[in-house]
View 1: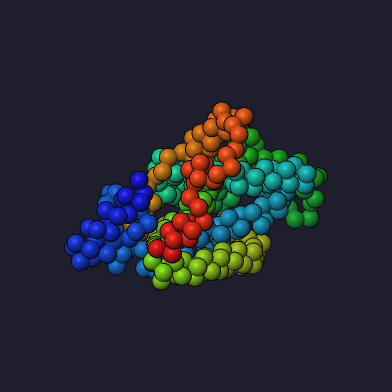
View 2: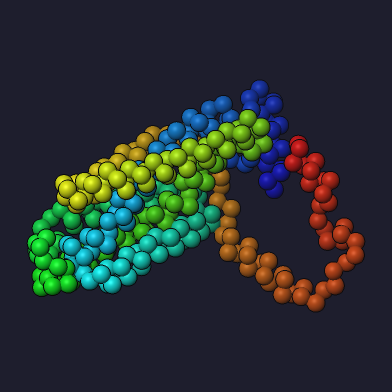
Length: 303
C-alpha cells in the first residue's frame, strides 16, 4: 500500500511539474506535501529549540528535587529518595503510552501538542506550589536538621506538590517519544541530500539535549539555591511556554507520517502466527518462505 501511494505521488508530481515527498509524509489534512515548501531545516529549526528548553525544565526539577523534598517538604532522606526514583521511573515509562497513542490514533503532531500543554500545566502548577507560602509547609530554618523538623507538610500540600510532578510525568510521556521522531520525519529517506541532512539533524538534536542539561545543572541549580525555588522553576516554565509557541509557528512547514495503527496489534499477530505454525517444518527452498532475496532488497535500496 505504501509503495502504491509513493508511485501515485511520484506520477502526480511529474505531471504537474512539481516534486512531492516519496516517503509517504502528508500535511495535517492528509494531502501529499511538496518537497520544496515543507520539511528539512526550515521545519526542524522550530523543533530543535523545544528539546533544549524541555531538558532545562526536566533537569531543572530532577537535579535538586531530593534537596527540595528534604529541606522544604521536610521528608526524610530515604523517603525523599524513594519518591524521587518513583517519579523518574514514571517519567521514563509514560513515553510507552505516548508512543502508542501517536502511532495508533492521534499521530505525532497532535499527541505532542496535547502533551506539551499538559507538561506546561504541570510546570506552571509546580512553580505556584513552590512560590506560594500557603502551598508549602513553614520553614524550619537552615540550622535545624531535616529529620528534627516538626513542621510537617499537610496532606494537601504534599498532594498538590506530587500532583504537579506527575502531571509533568504525563506530559513528558507524549512529548519525549514524538518530538525527535517528528524531526526525523522532516527529511525524506528517498532523497539523498535529505537523507544526509537527517544525520546532521540528530547531531544538533543531541547538542540541544546536552546544552539544556548543562544549563539546568549549573545556572538553574544556582538560581534555586541562591534566589529561590519560585524563580528557579519559573524560568524553565517560561522557556517551555515560548518553545511551544515557536513550535506552533512552524506548523505549516511540517511533514507528518499518518497514524499506522497500534504496534501492539501487529506484535500480537506475529505471536499468534508463531504459535499456530509452531510445528510447521521450515522448507529448504527460501522462496517458499515468501521473502525477498538479498539481490532484490539491494535493488530496492539503491532505487
